[in-house]
Amino acid sequence: MVGKICGTGSYVPPHVMDNDDLAKIVDTNDEWIRERTGIGKRHIIEEETTSYMAGQAALRAVEQSGIDPEEIDMILVATSSSETIFPCAACEVQRTIGATHAVGYDLNAACTGFVLAFNTAQAYISAGFCRTVMVIGADSMSTLIDWTDRGTCILFGDGAGAVILRAQDGNPVCMAAHSDGKKGPALTQLSRHRKGWENEQNKESYIHMDGQGVFKFAVRKVPEIIEEVLEKAELKLDDIDYFVLHQANRRIIEAAAKRLKVSMDRFPVNLEEYANTSAATVPILLDELNRDGRFREGQKIMLAGFGAGLTWAACLFEW
Ligand code: COA
Image (tube, rainbow, N blue to C red; front, side, top):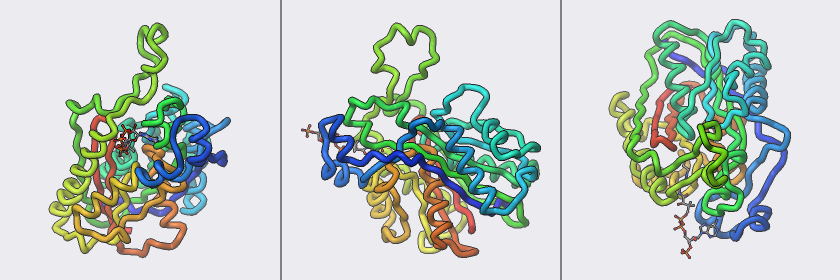
């Protein structure tokens, strides 16, 4: 069995902050941000929350798929910024969409979270444990960043994306996933729920990042894992219609495409509009491409994510 996408949805908050707005807060400018990252603006929550955005994306996916929410067996939400530790965001989504027969849980692997949740859902479907799974990536990165640190605050935005997978006869998808815990310090976000946190410098409670270290890691590991999945699938780069990568930085995507010697035409990018929404980038992009009518039945799509942990993962599936 294999999970086929039967509906997608996404939600971003209406409040927009462009690069000029950021230049009023930190010493930066539109030209620098665009040149180094490809980012033009980001959507930022006001009253919304991570699980609210996840619920809205899920409602849109349900509407598009035409399925009855009671058919959903499982809801997985990839997030590292839920407004509650518990109940998990997935149970909030269950309530929002009325998926009364589903089990829901969250999965945290930072920016790699959605691809790992997608792989997890595919594994449940292939094993015959589930038939219909909602997979969501949702993050409110604006609640984690230090708005006085120009090295990180320019990079991130808020949003959520969802896909619904339905079991169909067919070979399981090809996937791969890795972690390197030794490199964890390259990208960290300490929990505000740890013992003694209130005595520490407030700055400790925000994202810390070795930007160049993360950049180099992504540029090396993304092409590697794509090749690994292709080898398992016994396919070639030319067989892939779209490479849907985690949207962290346009230059990372361009460097990965160059290493693979694949034209950027097959690497869609939407960083200009949303910036890095962490676990939400891949499903938001999938939803955009789907609603634009870019996907055709039988096309081969490669997902690849990377991020804190450090973690990286990929999945090859057919539309
Ligand atoms: N605006 C203007 N100037 C800035 C700036 C900003 N927001 N941030 C840094 N600079 C300055 C630096 O101070 C430095 O100045 P100097 O040369 O006078 O010392 C110069 O720009 C270059 O800084 P550097 O850090 O070398 O830039 P970079 O080309 O590595 O780009 C990142 C920085 C963060 C954009 C880049 O490293 C990156 O995208 N890394 C990956 C991060 C990521 O994607 N993380 C999430 C992964 S899931």
